[in-house]
Image (cartoon, rainbow, N blue to C red; front, side, top):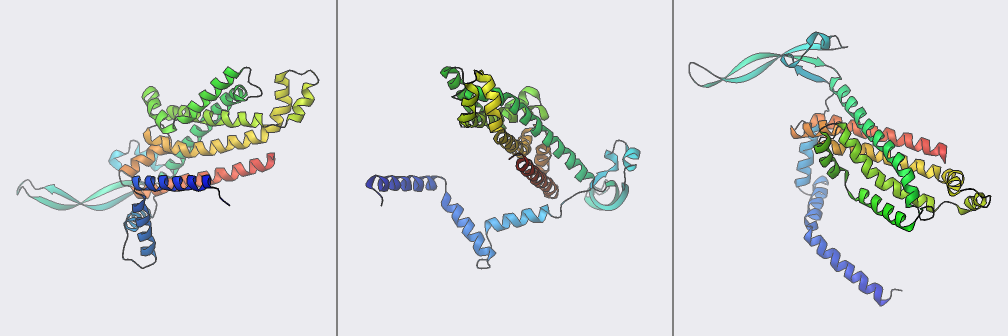
Length: 320
Protein backbone atom coordinates (compact mmCIF):
# COMPACT_ATOMS: atom_id res chain seq x y z
CA UNK A 1 0.00 0.00 0.00
CA UNK A 2 2.88 2.37 0.83
CA UNK A 3 6.11 2.33 -1.13
CA UNK A 4 9.56 2.64 0.42
CA UNK A 5 9.83 6.32 -0.49
CA UNK A 6 6.60 7.18 1.36
CA UNK A 7 7.72 5.26 4.44
CA UNK A 8 11.11 7.02 4.44
CA UNK A 9 9.50 10.45 4.03
CA UNK A 10 7.03 9.71 6.83
CA UNK A 11 9.90 8.63 9.08
CA UNK A 12 11.89 11.79 8.31
CA UNK A 13 8.82 13.95 8.94
CA UNK A 14 8.25 12.21 12.28
CA UNK A 15 11.86 12.80 13.33
CA UNK A 16 11.72 16.48 12.33
CA UNK A 17 8.42 17.00 14.14
CA UNK A 18 9.79 15.29 17.26
CA UNK A 19 12.86 17.54 17.17
CA UNK A 20 10.70 20.62 16.66
CA UNK A 21 8.41 19.62 19.54
CA UNK A 22 11.44 19.27 21.80
CA UNK A 23 12.78 22.68 20.77
CA UNK A 24 9.41 24.36 21.38
CA UNK A 25 8.88 22.61 24.73
CA UNK A 26 5.59 21.06 23.65
CA UNK A 27 5.97 18.47 26.39
CA UNK A 28 5.20 21.16 28.97
CA UNK A 29 2.14 22.18 26.92
CA UNK A 30 0.72 18.66 26.98
CA UNK A 31 1.58 18.29 30.67
CA UNK A 32 -0.14 21.56 31.65
CA UNK A 33 -3.22 20.77 29.55
CA UNK A 34 -3.38 17.28 31.02
CA UNK A 35 -3.12 18.65 34.55
CA UNK A 36 -5.91 21.13 33.77
CA UNK A 37 -8.18 18.34 32.48
CA UNK A 38 -7.50 16.22 35.55
CA UNK A 39 -8.14 19.15 37.89
CA UNK A 40 -11.37 19.98 36.06
CA UNK A 41 -12.50 16.39 36.47
CA UNK A 42 -11.66 16.45 40.20
CA UNK A 43 -8.82 13.93 39.83
CA UNK A 44 -6.15 16.46 40.76
CA UNK A 45 -6.12 19.23 43.33
CA UNK A 46 -5.04 22.16 41.13
CA UNK A 47 -3.34 23.15 37.88
CA UNK A 48 -1.41 26.20 36.74
CA UNK A 49 -3.81 26.83 33.85
CA UNK A 50 -6.82 26.57 36.15
CA UNK A 51 -5.31 28.98 38.67
CA UNK A 52 -4.60 31.54 35.95
CA UNK A 53 -8.03 31.27 34.37
CA UNK A 54 -9.86 31.42 37.70
CA UNK A 55 -7.95 34.54 38.71
CA UNK A 56 -8.70 36.19 35.38
CA UNK A 57 -12.40 35.31 35.41
CA UNK A 58 -12.76 36.49 39.01
CA UNK A 59 -11.44 39.91 38.02
CA UNK A 60 -13.28 40.06 34.69
CA UNK A 61 -16.82 39.37 35.91
CA UNK A 62 -19.13 41.08 36.48
CA UNK A 63 -18.27 43.39 33.61
CA UNK A 64 -18.46 47.17 34.00
CA UNK A 65 -20.93 49.25 32.02
CA UNK A 66 -21.16 52.40 34.16
CA UNK A 67 -18.64 55.22 34.50
CA UNK A 68 -17.60 56.51 37.92
CA UNK A 69 -15.47 59.65 37.86
CA UNK A 70 -14.31 61.67 40.89
CA UNK A 71 -15.96 65.09 40.66
CA UNK A 72 -12.58 66.84 40.89
CA UNK A 73 -11.66 65.29 37.54
CA UNK A 74 -14.91 66.26 35.79
CA UNK A 75 -14.45 69.28 33.54
CA UNK A 76 -18.06 70.38 33.06
CA UNK A 77 -20.04 68.86 35.90
CA UNK A 78 -23.37 70.55 35.11
CA UNK A 79 -23.33 69.37 31.50
CA UNK A 80 -22.46 65.81 32.52
CA UNK A 81 -25.21 65.78 35.14
CA UNK A 82 -27.71 66.80 32.46
CA UNK A 83 -27.28 63.41 30.74
CA UNK A 84 -30.00 60.82 31.47
CA UNK A 85 -29.72 58.98 34.81
CA UNK A 86 -26.42 60.69 35.74
CA UNK A 87 -26.09 61.33 39.46
CA UNK A 88 -23.67 62.24 42.22
CA UNK A 89 -22.73 59.57 44.74
CA UNK A 90 -20.76 60.12 47.95
CA UNK A 91 -19.05 57.14 49.54
CA UNK A 92 -16.94 56.72 52.67
CA UNK A 93 -13.33 55.83 52.06
CA UNK A 94 -10.40 54.97 54.30
CA UNK A 95 -7.27 57.01 53.69
CA UNK A 96 -3.81 56.55 55.16
CA UNK A 97 -1.95 59.76 55.90
CA UNK A 98 0.89 61.06 58.03
CA UNK A 99 -0.04 62.56 61.40
CA UNK A 100 1.90 65.81 61.72
CA UNK A 101 1.99 65.59 65.53
CA UNK A 102 3.07 61.99 66.03
CA UNK A 103 4.78 61.50 62.64
CA UNK A 104 3.00 58.16 62.35
CA UNK A 105 0.80 56.84 59.54
CA UNK A 106 -2.82 56.81 60.63
CA UNK A 107 -6.04 55.76 58.92
CA UNK A 108 -8.83 58.30 58.62
CA UNK A 109 -12.34 57.88 57.26
CA UNK A 110 -13.22 60.46 54.66
CA UNK A 111 -15.78 60.99 51.93
CA UNK A 112 -15.37 61.02 48.17
CA UNK A 113 -17.96 62.18 45.65
CA UNK A 114 -18.26 60.52 42.27
CA UNK A 115 -20.17 61.37 39.13
CA UNK A 116 -21.97 58.14 38.22
CA UNK A 117 -23.15 57.71 34.64
CA UNK A 118 -25.07 54.44 34.16
CA UNK A 119 -23.96 52.76 30.90
CA UNK A 120 -21.44 55.58 30.47
CA UNK A 121 -18.51 53.24 29.99
CA UNK A 122 -20.52 50.99 27.68
CA UNK A 123 -21.39 54.02 25.53
CA UNK A 124 -17.71 54.99 25.42
CA UNK A 125 -16.73 51.45 24.38
CA UNK A 126 -19.38 51.43 21.64
CA UNK A 127 -17.96 54.67 20.26
CA UNK A 128 -14.48 53.11 20.26
CA UNK A 129 -15.87 50.03 18.51
CA UNK A 130 -17.50 52.29 15.91
CA UNK A 131 -14.12 53.92 15.31
CA UNK A 132 -12.57 50.46 14.96
CA UNK A 133 -15.20 49.48 12.39
CA UNK A 134 -14.61 52.71 10.48
CA UNK A 135 -10.87 51.99 10.39
CA UNK A 136 -11.55 48.50 9.02
CA UNK A 137 -14.12 49.78 6.51
CA UNK A 138 -11.88 52.48 5.04
CA UNK A 139 -8.94 50.09 4.90
CA UNK A 140 -11.08 47.57 3.03
CA UNK A 141 -12.38 50.19 0.58
CA UNK A 142 -8.87 51.43 -0.19
CA UNK A 143 -7.69 47.82 -0.60
CA UNK A 144 -10.51 47.02 -3.04
CA UNK A 145 -9.85 50.17 -5.08
CA UNK A 146 -6.17 49.29 -5.48
CA UNK A 147 -6.58 45.52 -5.80
CA UNK A 148 -9.05 45.58 -8.70
CA UNK A 149 -6.66 47.09 -11.30
CA UNK A 150 -3.64 45.43 -9.70
CA UNK A 151 -5.26 42.00 -9.96
CA UNK A 152 -5.56 42.37 -13.73
CA UNK A 153 -1.81 42.93 -13.93
CA UNK A 154 -1.28 39.87 -11.72
CA UNK A 155 -3.57 37.60 -13.77
CA UNK A 156 -1.53 35.50 -16.18
CA UNK A 157 -4.20 35.58 -18.90
CA UNK A 158 -4.69 39.38 -18.85
CA UNK A 159 -1.35 40.81 -17.76
CA UNK A 160 0.20 42.86 -20.61
CA UNK A 161 3.65 41.27 -20.24
CA UNK A 162 5.28 38.45 -18.36
CA UNK A 163 7.62 40.92 -16.61
CA UNK A 164 4.65 42.97 -15.42
CA UNK A 165 3.00 39.77 -14.24
CA UNK A 166 6.11 38.75 -12.28
CA UNK A 167 6.60 42.23 -10.82
CA UNK A 168 2.94 42.44 -9.80
CA UNK A 169 2.98 39.04 -8.12
CA UNK A 170 6.20 39.90 -6.29
CA UNK A 171 4.76 43.23 -5.12
CA UNK A 172 1.57 41.74 -3.68
CA UNK A 173 3.56 38.93 -2.05
CA UNK A 174 5.71 41.57 -0.35
CA UNK A 175 2.63 43.45 0.91
CA UNK A 176 1.19 40.18 2.20
CA UNK A 177 4.39 39.23 3.99
CA UNK A 178 4.48 42.34 6.21
CA UNK A 179 2.26 41.79 9.30
CA UNK A 180 -0.16 44.61 10.08
CA UNK A 181 1.23 45.01 13.58
CA UNK A 182 4.76 45.60 12.27
CA UNK A 183 3.72 48.08 9.60
CA UNK A 184 1.46 49.85 12.12
CA UNK A 185 4.47 50.32 14.42
CA UNK A 186 6.37 52.16 11.69
CA UNK A 187 3.32 54.07 10.48
CA UNK A 188 2.62 55.35 14.01
CA UNK A 189 6.10 56.88 13.91
CA UNK A 190 5.27 58.50 10.56
CA UNK A 191 1.68 59.66 11.16
CA UNK A 192 1.49 59.73 14.95
CA UNK A 193 -1.08 58.04 17.16
CA UNK A 194 -4.62 57.72 15.85
CA UNK A 195 -6.67 55.93 13.20
CA UNK A 196 -4.64 56.97 10.12
CA UNK A 197 -1.72 54.54 10.66
CA UNK A 198 -4.25 51.81 11.39
CA UNK A 199 -6.10 52.42 8.13
CA UNK A 200 -2.90 52.45 6.08
CA UNK A 201 -1.46 49.36 7.78
CA UNK A 202 -4.61 47.31 7.25
CA UNK A 203 -5.01 48.54 3.66
CA UNK A 204 -1.43 47.56 2.76
CA UNK A 205 -1.84 44.02 4.09
CA UNK A 206 -5.33 43.64 2.61
CA UNK A 207 -4.08 44.62 -0.86
CA UNK A 208 -1.60 41.77 -0.68
CA UNK A 209 -4.41 39.27 -0.12
CA UNK A 210 -7.17 40.74 -2.27
CA UNK A 211 -5.00 41.32 -5.35
CA UNK A 212 -3.81 37.71 -5.17
CA UNK A 213 -7.29 36.24 -4.73
CA UNK A 214 -8.85 38.52 -7.36
CA UNK A 215 -6.13 37.57 -9.87
CA UNK A 216 -6.66 33.87 -9.26
CA UNK A 217 -10.42 34.27 -9.77
CA UNK A 218 -9.78 36.10 -13.05
CA UNK A 219 -7.48 33.30 -14.21
CA UNK A 220 -10.06 30.65 -13.24
CA UNK A 221 -13.07 32.43 -14.80
CA UNK A 222 -15.19 30.46 -17.28
CA UNK A 223 -13.42 30.86 -20.69
CA UNK A 224 -16.52 30.26 -22.81
CA UNK A 225 -18.15 33.71 -22.36
CA UNK A 226 -14.74 35.28 -22.93
CA UNK A 227 -14.29 33.40 -26.21
CA UNK A 228 -17.80 34.29 -27.35
CA UNK A 229 -17.23 38.02 -26.84
CA UNK A 230 -13.67 37.91 -28.19
CA UNK A 231 -14.77 36.52 -31.57
CA UNK A 232 -16.91 39.63 -32.10
CA UNK A 233 -13.72 41.69 -32.22
CA UNK A 234 -14.10 43.16 -28.72
CA UNK A 235 -10.99 44.46 -26.99
CA UNK A 236 -9.39 42.66 -24.05
CA UNK A 237 -10.77 45.33 -21.73
CA UNK A 238 -14.29 44.77 -23.10
CA UNK A 239 -13.92 41.00 -22.64
CA UNK A 240 -12.76 41.58 -19.09
CA UNK A 241 -15.64 43.94 -18.34
CA UNK A 242 -18.43 41.97 -20.01
CA UNK A 243 -17.38 38.34 -19.52
CA UNK A 244 -14.97 38.09 -16.60
CA UNK A 245 -16.22 40.61 -14.04
CA UNK A 246 -19.86 39.34 -14.03
CA UNK A 247 -18.53 35.80 -13.67
CA UNK A 248 -16.34 36.54 -10.64
CA UNK A 249 -18.42 39.30 -9.01
CA UNK A 250 -19.93 37.01 -6.38
CA UNK A 251 -16.50 35.66 -5.46
CA UNK A 252 -15.05 39.18 -5.33
CA UNK A 253 -17.86 40.25 -3.00
CA UNK A 254 -17.36 37.27 -0.71
CA UNK A 255 -13.61 37.88 -0.53
CA UNK A 256 -14.14 41.58 0.19
CA UNK A 257 -16.58 40.79 2.99
CA UNK A 258 -14.12 38.31 4.45
CA UNK A 259 -11.35 40.92 4.39
CA UNK A 260 -13.68 43.43 6.05
CA UNK A 261 -14.47 40.90 8.78
CA UNK A 262 -10.78 40.17 9.21
CA UNK A 263 -9.89 43.87 9.27
CA UNK A 264 -12.41 44.49 12.06
CA UNK A 265 -10.65 41.88 14.17
CA UNK A 266 -7.17 43.05 13.22
CA UNK A 267 -8.10 46.69 13.89
CA UNK A 268 -8.51 45.75 17.54
CA UNK A 269 -4.98 44.31 17.54
CA UNK A 270 -3.13 47.17 15.85
CA UNK A 271 -4.78 49.52 18.31
CA UNK A 272 -2.44 47.99 20.89
CA UNK A 273 0.44 49.94 19.32
CA UNK A 274 -1.46 53.22 19.19
CA UNK A 275 -3.10 52.87 15.76
CA UNK A 276 -6.55 53.95 16.95
CA UNK A 277 -9.73 52.11 17.78
CA UNK A 278 -10.76 49.95 20.68
CA UNK A 279 -7.35 48.28 20.92
CA UNK A 280 -5.80 51.31 22.61
CA UNK A 281 -8.47 51.22 25.30
CA UNK A 282 -8.06 47.45 25.66
CA UNK A 283 -4.31 47.70 26.20
CA UNK A 284 -4.65 50.55 28.69
CA UNK A 285 -7.22 48.71 30.81
CA UNK A 286 -5.24 45.47 30.66
CA UNK A 287 -2.04 47.21 31.76
CA UNK A 288 -3.94 48.68 34.73
CA UNK A 289 -5.32 45.21 35.62
CA UNK A 290 -8.90 46.46 35.21
CA UNK A 291 -10.13 43.11 33.97
CA UNK A 292 -13.81 43.97 34.54
CA UNK A 293 -13.48 46.66 31.87
CA UNK A 294 -11.46 44.28 29.70
CA UNK A 295 -14.44 41.92 29.88
CA UNK A 296 -16.73 44.69 28.60
CA UNK A 297 -14.37 45.41 25.72
CA UNK A 298 -14.05 41.75 24.73
CA UNK A 299 -17.82 41.26 24.86
CA UNK A 300 -18.44 44.24 22.57
CA UNK A 301 -15.77 43.01 20.14
CA UNK A 302 -17.31 39.52 20.08
CA UNK A 303 -20.84 40.83 19.48
CA UNK A 304 -19.61 43.13 16.71
CA UNK A 305 -17.82 40.30 14.90
CA UNK A 306 -20.88 38.06 15.34
CA UNK A 307 -23.19 40.74 13.93
CA UNK A 308 -20.86 41.40 11.01
CA UNK A 309 -20.63 37.68 10.26
CA UNK A 310 -24.42 37.40 10.11
CA UNK A 311 -24.65 40.46 7.84
CA UNK A 312 -21.97 39.09 5.53
CA UNK A 313 -23.77 35.75 5.28
CA UNK A 314 -27.02 37.48 4.26
CA UNK A 315 -25.26 39.55 1.60
CA UNK A 316 -23.54 36.45 0.17
CA UNK A 317 -26.85 34.55 0.04
CA UNK A 318 -28.45 37.36 -1.95
CA UNK A 319 -25.58 37.48 -4.46
CA UNK A 320 -24.95 33.76 -4.97
